[in-house]
Length: 97
Image (cartoon, rainbow, N blue to C red):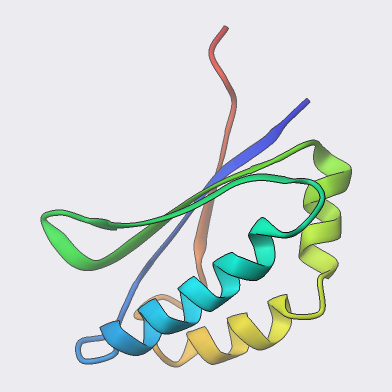
């Protein structure tokens, strides 16, 4: 079963360019993961400092491999001081069939 989630965070005022640079660099790496199917980065049209990342992984094992990737920790550490939240807020999604 696919693992689907929405990660959300808000860039601190003035940090938008750095957050965008970081997330786009990170996205390139995640998209190369064997088990990653989708990693789309958005900002909210009515609030451009609000980032939404839609992620889909092949299955739970692929998601766990993603969490263990060596570039995840450094990305999250760099992001932490640039966003309003303590960390990305994750919402796990189930498909309606």
